[in-house]
Image (cartoon, rainbow, N blue to C red; front, side, top):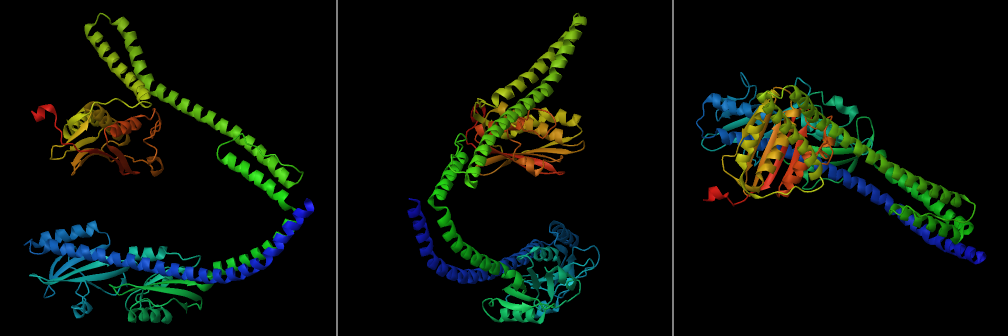
Length: 585
């Protein structure tokens, strides 16, 4: 039987040699061509993406300037009012350094700069008027801060012809190109219409940007000129940089401004993967041929069967059947591997049980710590009041104080116990039409004293339109109080808390915003889970219960936060056409 098995394996191995050799030769050729083509196509796509982003950058700037022009046109605004509009746009869009408006006679009408404007109408822009371009971008230059800057000019038509000129910082474009990495040593560069370098991603050539009107190499300029002459981008080519390195270059032109993006990658780097894979494939094919004959002769089917047995048990363990074990014959390494696998499976079962125990202990410890924290204060207050009532029982005024204290603290204890009970079972709610603005105003009024005690400003911004939702007044009040109390606890004295309502077509929203410490990004996805809190103590049930209430009312709750700036909770509910009975009457 063993001889037949050995001959069978040897026959299969021998029959596979010739097809494997042919397959190897074809694979090496196809792999080399395919890899090189893939690298070229990928670099071309990257260059086009960069060109599209740069064009979008200037298109957005153009739309901003057109918007400014529309705001100023025909409004009969005073000069100071026009300047205020320009300054507001400069503040709102950080890429704009200065915006100025000139009339048809090149006289300055308004400027965002305090003092005299430094901008002038580019002569090239006037000569290119009528070419169909939406705007004109001047040749970039390096400002006093060492950053690339350019001027954009747009001709204004209509009843008040003139020009709107803006000085634009290209720092973001510079950084965009600088961040592009192609392979290990590839980079991107940006040329303007005159062949000047605007941005360069190669660390060795960054000093060129600091030189005003630094030119690209002759090969790069020629490559860019060919792109302008042809309707489609020229085919990738091999160039040499100033250090004589051979580069694979692809190009993507930009329509307006007529700039060019070039992605360059050393050919050694670009085709290194192809050559490496080619060598690895040849080695793998040779080893496969040799291994097929030798291993097929030495081990045979018994080896394969034992591997299959080990694979089956591995899949069983992966599927959760932790009691499965492998039984292998022989005394070789495969048997040792099977024994090691069985030991590993036994250890996994032990570790799994230990993790369960630790999770239970951690959960019980957290619940116990939270209960101690949340119940110790009210119980202590009740205890102290009981001691005093023994001495001051005859004092009617203190008996009344004692009654209020006990009732208040019992309400707190009951709320903690209700939280524990309700977290496992949905809270039954009575849904009826309620005035959303009124529920928000009532909650803000109830929490105003807490905010004043904490030295905070609590402000409401209600929708001018009366809106109704299907909800439970008391449940909604609990959600608002939970969120406002969290905001109070997270905001330092002098801060601001805003609770606002907004009406949309078929939805209404309640936003609770604070200027507090914020929530770290890694914690945002967990704050609505049971027993999760960002505070040092407490059960961590407030937000979990709030989320359950909102979802029971058919709404959603979301949060956005930035550390050091504040947190915003958004409650979104479906709007209803129903009205409360009194309002309907």
